[in-house]
Length: 150
Image 1 (cartoon, rainbow, N blue to C red):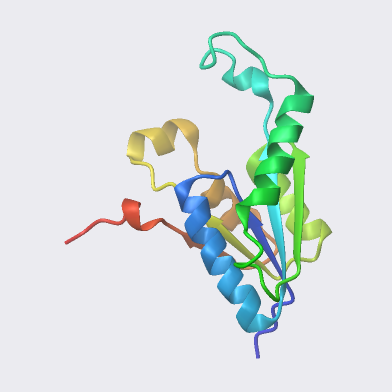
Image 2 (image 1 turned 90 degrees about the horizontal axis):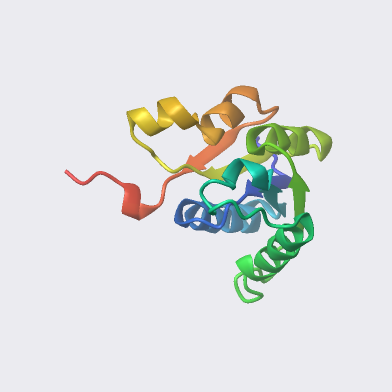
C-alpha cells in the first residue's frame, strides 16, 4: 500500500504551478497528507539585465514570497488540509530536492512549463532535475493551456 503523509508542492506562481497545486490539494485530501508549499527566491542579480539593471532588495523579494504564498491557496480550497508555507533562497532544483530530503517528503507535485527544445537546451529544466535527483516520487503537471491538441 502506498503511504503519503507529506506532499511538497514547489511553486513559481505560474499557470503550470497553479495546475500542480490543484493536484497536490486533491492528493492531500485523498491521502490525508500534510501539504508543504515552497517558493525558491533566486538571486536577483541573475535577472538584472531583464529588469533594466534594477536589482530588487532581498527584503522586497522575501515580502513578495510570503504574501504570494499566503494567498496562493484560499481557505475554502484548503479546508481540512494542513498546509505549511515557506520560502528559501537558492537555486530552485537544488532547494526543492534539499527540502524534500530535509522534511522527509513522500511525494513532490510540481508544474512543468513544457518549453520547446531550444529554451530547454539553454535554460535546462527544473522539473527534469528534480525528477532526476529527488529522494521520492515526483508528479509533474502541465497546465491545460500547454497541452497539445490532436
